Amino acid sequence: MEFRHLRYFLAVADALHFTKAAEGLPVSQPALSAQIKQLEQEVGVPLFDRVGRSVQLTRAGAIFREHARRALQEMELAQAAITEEEGLQRGTLTVGVVQTVNAYLIPEIVGRFSALHPLVSLKLDELSGPDIEAGVRSGLLEVGIGFVPVASERIESQALFEEDLVLIVSPRHRFAHRRQLSLSALTKESLILLSEKFCTRRLVNASFEQASVQPKVIVEMNSIEGILATVRRSHLATVLPRLSLGLTRTHALRAIPLRNPTPCRGVGLLWKKGGYRSGAAKALADQVRTVVDEHWH
Image (cartoon, rainbow, N blue to C red; front, side):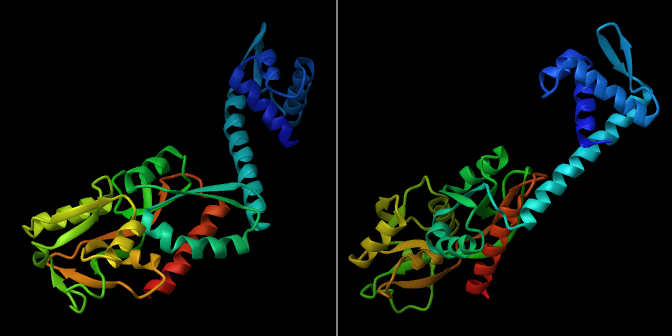
């Protein structure tokens, strides 16, 4: 018995018609009939009842169908595992990443991954947290690096680290040498913040509301790099993830922890629940965890 016999058998079992089944196979209808007869001889019992042009599964055929499906599935998994064991020789991995992680951690992660698996093509999209969840749910993204806990029950996640938001100022700012600040200290402070389309800004707003603070937002921008460049050259302060300072190449900015409350959120790896994880996805996740451990532990 060969695996092609199982494929031919399942095609007929699904179509319940030899001619229709042959249309989707690289074999003629007479040859397909001959292959099925050969399979029945090996099994020792009829697998189909032939009634005119149509066919029906026999009781033995119905039992054989379930085992044939499992056998082919196991073979496909074995072939995938062999491909992965040989070093991820081909394919494209699509990944969605939130902004600060993409700017600071992803360059190092990609460098290490590409050195180990040079034939795997990485497609990285910088997206918002909700867009990453939507992409993972739909299968457009195989892996997400987004915010946890997730909103959807159809997504599985693994926490990586807690990302706290801090006040970022220039060395000339009056708060530059403070070790920490209560959020209420920013009541009259001139701020430059991300626009409200970003999850970061919505978290900042929620924290201000919790502290009963009315922020004095002078400027809104859509770019973290633009905000940091402006803070460096002005009297304005901003509230951004501490990780944002990884975008700067100098020590020209100060990060002051915020308290009462401390704005923070979890960052983690996201996968579609129950979905297949390729060798490339597993290898990338390993590199993400390694880099995160080096930076946070």
